[in-house]
Length: 409
Image (cartoon, one colour):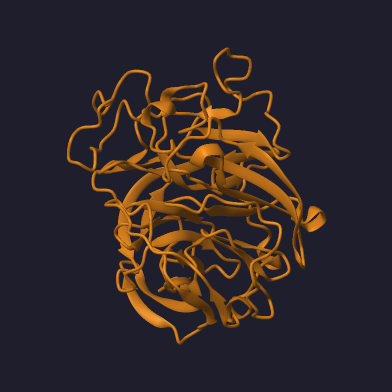
């Protein structure tokens, strides 16, 4: 059985602890997102304590409350909760900040590896080690700069201290490094067997997704120290990287484990159309770019595409013909008395809202869009220890929102 990297809810922050943050200046740069919303803009803003009165919004399951907690973040990418009531927030520009249980928002923590902060690159996911209580270890995924303007997805683990990070060790580097500022992924998920899953993109070099001697477009599984598990599907196979768990992926920006079943789910951007959800299995080929429901941004077919299906390639578990620009993913389960129980939340970048999928087992039986009134690009979504939903928006003035689900009738 698999489990998420979220720690015991009794140890995690309350809404009061997350509510306050001191004013803090940050600096950023500007760009425009592409048609499917994968990249975002930069500007200048200040992170501020901005808890306001809750705003009531409507959903198909009843009224929910949304509260703005923090504003002025520099394109935040991920949030992770810590057992002392604080949390960590990554900013794509390369800053890792700590939102303290006393309501203070730190300056950027020292020790974060250098990042390739161009286009969709930068500091990406943050995850708390399963043994954090004893090890104080965290994991970061990021776009790592290489020679001659190249870059690739990388993962580092480090010890978290009051002054920043120490004992930083890079445990994964996507090879080969390639040119271009797009399609890095990346999310980090632990199972309960000592493994770390790393989602990635194909760096907008489409054929690499099908090439097993390259790590682009692959879901990777490692041991927590970065070594390769002996039971990975391609271990010992000539011409294949042993880190690979599954392949044929485009740009995986959301990943989570269903607490009810232990199954790993991931979502990924299609091109123009064809965003999808998969339940990746070891050694399976998920088709990109040979099979796809999308087309090029130019309106022309994908050159390598042979249709929507082909023997030996897996069909998506769920597909959107029109791309919402999917991002962070979180399950809301184990709360049978609440209207949102057995939901899967997914951020939408292009359509600037929060997708709620209703689940019956693994089957998706309903879909609605939340936060349309806010109109911001949703980058990450996590379930807090208070049974609330926490959302980060990828904007010039990035925000952390807390959502209180509808109450049971």
